[in-house]
Length: 595
Image 1 (cartoon, rainbow, N blue to C red):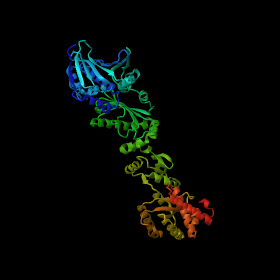
Image 2: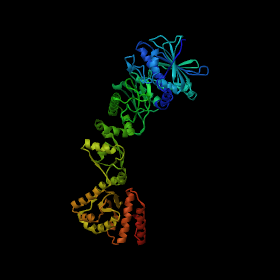
Image 3: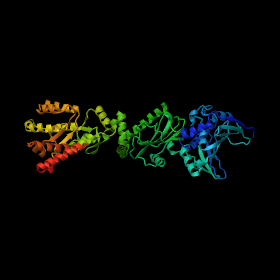
Image 4: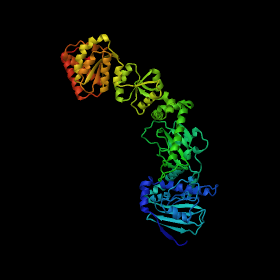
C-alpha cells in the first residue's frame, strides 16, 4: 500500500452533520435511500458505456463476527479526481459532469453520502473506476478530515460503502427491519438487490413492479393498491403524463376525507421512492384519491423528500387533473354503481371540482346531492319536485324555518355546508332557467297568505294594542295565514332593510297599519312576530279586552315563538314567560295549558 495523504474538508463538517440529522433529513433511515440512489446512479452511468450491463446492489449487514455494514454496487466507480471533487466538496455532484444524459440520474446535490454520518462516525468508500483501473479507499471521519489510499489488492469495478453503526442505531441494521426499509425505498428499481445476513445471501428485489408494466389489468392494480396502502379502493385509474414523464395509478378512496387531511401517497423519482406526503403533483381538489406514481423527469428538492415546484411540475399536475376529470365524466356510463358510490362518498370534493370547472358542472349537475328539510336529495330530484328552488345560506336560518317550510309544501336546501351556497349561485348564473332563490325566515314570512281586505277593520284595534306590547321587545306584529294551523305564532329576525321593505309593502297594499308601524317602531333594527289568523287561540285573542290579560298572553306567545324558532332564550325572556304564566294563573285563564 502506498503512502497516505490527508486532506481537509472545505466545510465545517460537524455543523453539516448537525444540519443533515436535525433539519435536512427528517429520518435516520434516509442514508439507506441515499446509498440506493448513489448506487443506482453509478450503475446508470456505466450503462451509458455498456448498454447490456446488469446492475446489482449487494448489502451485507453487521453481525457478531463482522460488525461492519457494507453496501456495494457494480456501477461506474470513482476516479481519484472524482473523490476530491465530489465526495469531499459539499454541493458538488458527479451526475452530469461527464455524462450528457444527466436526466437519467436521481441525485443532484452531492451531499447524500454525508447522510451516513447520522448513523456512523466514519465512512469508508472503496471504489474502482471503469475509466481508471486504480482501486482507491476514501476514509472520512466526523471530526472533519478524510484521507485517500491507493489499494494494492484488485477489486471489481464499482463502489463499496463501509459503515461502523452507532449503538443507538443498531436496530436499523437488524435483518427484518433493514429488509423492510430497502423494499420501501427500492421496490420499483430495475436493479437486482440482495442482502447478506450471516454469510447467507438473499435476493429481495429483482422484478419490475406490475403497476409500471405496459399493460396491467384493473384487478391487478386494485390488488397492488390494497397491498401498498391497506385499503380496498373503489377504483383504480392508470395514467401517464407527457410533462415529467409521470406514470402511475390514481386510487379512489372508499371513505370520506377532510379537506385539511393529507393523504399518504407513493411517489417515486426514477424508480426510487421519494415521498409519501408530498401533495404537489396532485390538483388541490383531489383529496379523494391516493397516488402511486413514478416520474422520470421531475426534480427533487435538496432533501430529496419532495418534488421541486416548477413549471414542469405544474404542467404534470394539469395533465393529471385532466385524467381525473375525464374519468369522472366517463365512469357514469362505464360503471354506474361505482359512480353512485363515488358521489355518495365524495360529493363534497366533487362539488369543489364542479365549482372550478363549468364544463364538468354540466355533466355532474343532475346528481349533485344537497341536504334538504326532507332528507338528502339530488339536484334533479329537487327540481322535479318543485319549479322554485329555495335554499338557506345560514344554518341558523335553516333550523328556524325548516319545519315551517315543510308545512308550506316547500323543499328547502340547507346550503350552509362548504361550497353549497357558492355552487347554487353558480348554477343560477350559468343556468337561468332554474329559479333559485335564497330563503331567510323573513322571506318565508312573505310566502304566508295575508288577511283579506275586509278583515283589516276586525284586527285594527287588536293589532294596535298588541303592537304597543311588542314595542317593549323591539318587535313588529304581523297577522297572516299559514300552516300548520296549530302553530299560533312564529318569530323571525329582521334587519333594517327588511323592516323598511315590510312597511313599503304595506303601503303599496294600502294597508292602514303601515302608518301605525312606522310611528310606533323604534329607530333601530326590529324583529317580527307573526300571528296565525287561522289558529283558534289567535281568533279568541282578538276579543280579549283586558289589557293586563292581553299583555300576559302576548308575552307567552312571544317566548313560545322564540323557542319554536330555535332562537336562544335568555334570562330576560324566561323571566317574562314565568311572570306572564303566573299572571294568567292568577287571572284563571281557562284551558291555558293548551297554549
